[in-house]
Length: 80
Image (tube, rainbow, N blue to C red; front, side, top):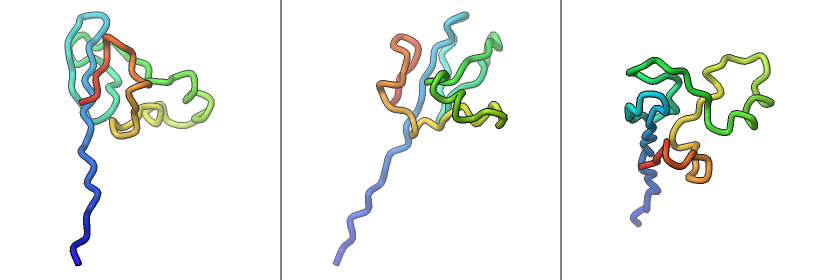
């Protein structure tokens, strides 16, 4: 009997820097613009900040597969 495997495609997060408009692609949330070095806050920052008190700042940034369309800021992010 053949098993059907559920293979999830890896999501790609595409973000435009709101300062210099450089477009960056990543499989994780981007912490800093690669062009102008502008630091970014993670998506859903105000929800996450209460869950990670005292932990590493990097834990606030999600992998692309953990992000849903409704989490994105229209005009700055795209999930592909």
